[in-house]
Amino acid sequence: MLRVDIITIFPDYFREAFDYGIIRRARAAGLVDIQAHDLRAWTLDKHHVVDDRPFGGGDGMVLKPEPIFAAVESLAGARRREGIAAGKRVVLLSPQGKPFTQSLAAEFAKGEQIVLICGRYEGVDERVAEALVTDELSIGDYVLSGGEPAALTVVDATVRLLPGALGSETSATNESFSDGLLDCPQYTRPPEFEGMRAPEVLLNGNHAEIARWRRDAGLEKTKRNRPDLLKE
Ligand code: 9D3
Image (cartoon, rainbow, N blue to C red; front, side, top):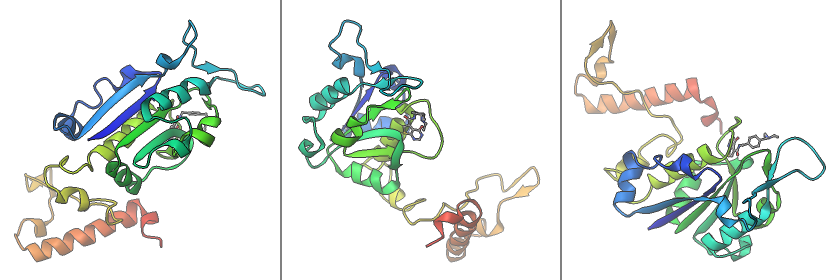
């Protein structure tokens, strides 16, 4: 079973997030155990302080290293990346991270544990990225208010790849990004809706013709919406 531990100052954010669809089924089937932990549980002071002012001045607050190192030690068994067992990943979600991709999700799905550290405020003390984490990851070039929505994304993309998580084993390999192209358009009844007809080729039952149409239509969609996927 894959273990997922999320370190956050907003554990309640995740309360119902994994209670739907494929992720709920994977949990119910015992394929994954997902837990969100309050970073404040690893503070030692009376007021459970997790942040402090940045050295050198500036706006905002920075997450302190001590509670994060303590949390990762208790959840993953080490205080330095060299001590993290093979098969475990300690991930910092940050706007400065490398891009999270489908191939990383596939790697994570083969491992035994993912510890996800959610940043907040103006950032996280850099010693966390330097010495503790195995992967510093971003989910894209836009500004979030914290790492929590990014952690949701990483868990979702990873858990659905666990063997047995999808209805049919073929669906995970036969989809967007696995072959580097976008999915083809899909249609269902009615064949005509408000004057818009579904492509006739999909209605006539010629499966060779349908397969060719789908490949071409996926390529067309990729050219229009994601030309970057076709370059090199
Ligand atoms: C780059 C902006 N930073 C300049 C001071 C401030 C800042 C903005 C947003 C620091 C942290 C955040 C919170 N974002 C994340 O923690 C985050 C994130 C994101 O904003 N975009 C894409 N992926 C991610 S993963 C974590």
